[in-house]
Length: 134
Picture (tube, rainbow, N blue to C red):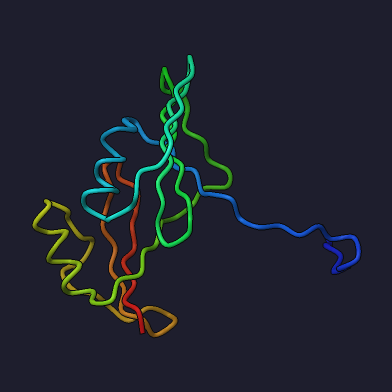
Protein backbone atom coordinates (compact mmCIF):
# COMPACT_ATOMS: atom_id res chain seq x y z
CA UNK A 1 0.00 0.00 0.00
CA UNK A 2 1.28 3.47 -0.88
CA UNK A 3 0.43 6.48 1.29
CA UNK A 4 0.30 9.96 -0.17
CA UNK A 5 1.98 12.84 1.62
CA UNK A 6 -0.57 15.47 0.70
CA UNK A 7 -0.97 18.03 3.49
CA UNK A 8 -3.94 19.60 1.71
CA UNK A 9 -6.10 16.47 2.00
CA UNK A 10 -4.67 15.11 5.26
CA UNK A 11 -6.83 15.84 8.31
CA UNK A 12 -5.21 16.89 11.56
CA UNK A 13 -4.97 13.84 13.84
CA UNK A 14 -4.25 14.00 17.53
CA UNK A 15 -3.89 10.91 19.69
CA UNK A 16 -6.86 10.74 22.09
CA UNK A 17 -5.93 7.74 24.25
CA UNK A 18 -4.48 4.24 24.35
CA UNK A 19 -6.77 1.37 25.39
CA UNK A 20 -5.53 -1.63 27.36
CA UNK A 21 -7.71 -4.74 27.78
CA UNK A 22 -7.51 -6.00 31.38
CA UNK A 23 -9.20 -8.80 33.31
CA UNK A 24 -10.05 -6.64 36.35
CA UNK A 25 -10.33 -2.89 35.70
CA UNK A 26 -10.43 -1.97 39.41
CA UNK A 27 -7.28 -3.99 40.19
CA UNK A 28 -5.44 -2.49 37.22
CA UNK A 29 -6.59 1.06 38.06
CA UNK A 30 -5.31 0.56 41.61
CA UNK A 31 -1.94 -0.65 40.29
CA UNK A 32 -1.49 2.20 37.81
CA UNK A 33 -2.61 4.80 40.37
CA UNK A 34 -0.90 3.50 43.52
CA UNK A 35 2.25 1.98 42.03
CA UNK A 36 2.86 4.00 38.84
CA UNK A 37 1.25 7.29 39.93
CA UNK A 38 -1.45 7.75 37.27
CA UNK A 39 -4.49 9.84 38.10
CA UNK A 40 -7.85 8.09 37.99
CA UNK A 41 -10.50 9.86 35.92
CA UNK A 42 -13.98 8.93 34.79
CA UNK A 43 -15.47 5.44 34.86
CA UNK A 44 -18.13 4.06 32.52
CA UNK A 45 -19.98 0.77 33.02
CA UNK A 46 -22.31 -0.79 30.44
CA UNK A 47 -23.90 -4.23 30.18
CA UNK A 48 -20.75 -5.69 28.62
CA UNK A 49 -17.90 -3.30 29.36
CA UNK A 50 -16.23 -1.46 32.24
CA UNK A 51 -13.95 1.45 31.31
CA UNK A 52 -11.68 3.38 33.67
CA UNK A 53 -9.73 6.37 32.36
CA UNK A 54 -6.26 7.08 33.77
CA UNK A 55 -4.10 10.17 33.23
CA UNK A 56 -0.32 10.29 32.98
CA UNK A 57 1.73 13.19 31.70
CA UNK A 58 -1.06 14.60 29.54
CA UNK A 59 -1.94 11.22 28.01
CA UNK A 60 -4.98 9.06 28.70
CA UNK A 61 -4.81 5.31 29.28
CA UNK A 62 -8.20 3.61 28.92
CA UNK A 63 -8.59 0.35 30.84
CA UNK A 64 -11.16 -1.95 29.20
CA UNK A 65 -12.70 -4.88 31.07
CA UNK A 66 -15.07 -6.89 28.86
CA UNK A 67 -17.97 -8.54 30.68
CA UNK A 68 -17.86 -11.45 30.10
CA UNK A 69 -14.25 -11.70 28.95
CA UNK A 70 -13.95 -12.31 25.20
CA UNK A 71 -13.24 -15.99 24.36
CA UNK A 72 -10.38 -15.14 21.99
CA UNK A 73 -7.55 -12.66 22.48
CA UNK A 74 -7.10 -10.08 19.75
CA UNK A 75 -3.89 -10.40 17.75
CA UNK A 76 -3.59 -7.80 15.00
CA UNK A 77 -2.36 -4.38 16.07
CA UNK A 78 -0.86 -5.71 19.29
CA UNK A 79 1.03 -3.15 21.38
CA UNK A 80 4.32 -4.44 22.78
CA UNK A 81 4.51 -2.29 25.91
CA UNK A 82 3.58 0.92 27.76
CA UNK A 83 6.49 3.26 28.53
CA UNK A 84 6.77 5.71 31.42
CA UNK A 85 9.61 8.21 31.88
CA UNK A 86 11.14 8.55 35.34
CA UNK A 87 13.75 11.02 36.64
CA UNK A 88 15.79 8.30 38.40
CA UNK A 89 15.37 4.73 37.20
CA UNK A 90 17.04 3.09 40.20
CA UNK A 91 14.77 4.97 42.65
CA UNK A 92 11.71 4.07 40.56
CA UNK A 93 12.78 0.41 40.50
CA UNK A 94 13.18 0.38 44.27
CA UNK A 95 9.75 1.96 44.73
CA UNK A 96 8.15 -0.64 42.44
CA UNK A 97 10.02 -3.55 44.06
CA UNK A 98 8.61 -2.44 47.43
CA UNK A 99 5.15 -2.88 45.86
CA UNK A 100 5.99 -6.43 44.73
CA UNK A 101 6.67 -5.62 41.07
CA UNK A 102 9.14 -7.97 39.35
CA UNK A 103 11.46 -6.89 36.57
CA UNK A 104 12.50 -8.83 33.45
CA UNK A 105 16.17 -8.21 34.27
CA UNK A 106 18.07 -7.32 37.45
CA UNK A 107 19.51 -4.05 36.16
CA UNK A 108 18.61 -1.41 33.58
CA UNK A 109 20.38 -1.30 30.24
CA UNK A 110 20.97 1.40 27.66
CA UNK A 111 18.19 1.47 25.12
CA UNK A 112 18.59 2.31 21.44
CA UNK A 113 18.09 6.04 22.12
CA UNK A 114 20.73 6.13 24.88
CA UNK A 115 18.26 6.19 27.78
CA UNK A 116 18.49 3.72 30.66
CA UNK A 117 15.52 1.33 30.36
CA UNK A 118 14.08 -1.68 32.16
CA UNK A 119 10.87 -3.70 31.76
CA UNK A 120 8.42 -5.06 34.33
CA UNK A 121 4.89 -6.45 34.23
CA UNK A 122 1.50 -5.01 35.15
CA UNK A 123 -1.38 -6.89 36.79
CA UNK A 124 -2.36 -8.77 33.60
CA UNK A 125 1.21 -9.39 32.46
CA UNK A 126 1.32 -6.35 30.18
CA UNK A 127 4.88 -5.15 29.62
CA UNK A 128 5.78 -1.80 31.17
CA UNK A 129 8.98 0.04 30.30
CA UNK A 130 10.63 2.51 32.61
CA UNK A 131 12.81 4.97 30.73
CA UNK A 132 15.09 7.39 32.58
CA UNK A 133 14.82 11.02 31.51
CA UNK A 134 18.01 12.51 30.10
